[in-house]
Amino acid sequence: MRKELVARQLDEQIAARFPVGRRLRVLDVGMGEGGQVLRLARAGHKVTGLERDAKLLAAAREALAAEPEGIRGRVRFVEGAGQETGVHFLPGSFDVVVCHGVLMYVEDPDATLAGLARMLAPGGLLSLLVRNADALAMRPGLAGDWAGALAAFGTDAYTNRLGLDVRADRLDALTATLTGISAPLHAWYGVRVFTDTAADEAEPPADPAALETLLAVEERAGRTDPYRRVAALLHLCGVRG
Image: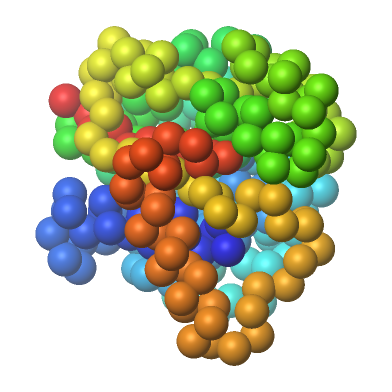
């Protein structure tokens, strides 16, 4: 459900920034298995996926091979890390740069963000999905893990569901960073306000109407204060000046 919500929010921002029907140049940094790359390519955009994990890259190539030739021709995969955009691409090469679920693994996020912003053409859109450091106590607190909730206050470090020690980001700090790299914050959303405590293996509602209602609730909460401020994830959209 997270992917569906973020996809809707990203599409909303693209529609607000660019003329209808324009074929955009998109860079997806840390694309994983390429699901979003394929979605955007199916919408007509020219998409480059950057991924450092060889297994994920292989899975993305396998998925792309099953697509029609017209879609395959709009996709390019590059093996590399998010910190290496300047090695692989020229400044101003993309209209949209997407970096979802990556910053929590990066030791120097400010330098990475500056590199991503340099990839944008003027007026380009930078889309970030990060863990919300201001709400790290919510998940253990709602689960009744009082010691875990107490330890989560005032820190940006946490252990994710993969068992990896990573870091979260704060809205105010990212807002300042985006301003400093000439891609000031244009819009932001909360993601997983009510569904963050659901088990990873939990299936979404099978009934389409029930699923749509659930997505509508999460989407409404994700754009409404104070709910979005306690979301597990933050989706931030900056625009290159």
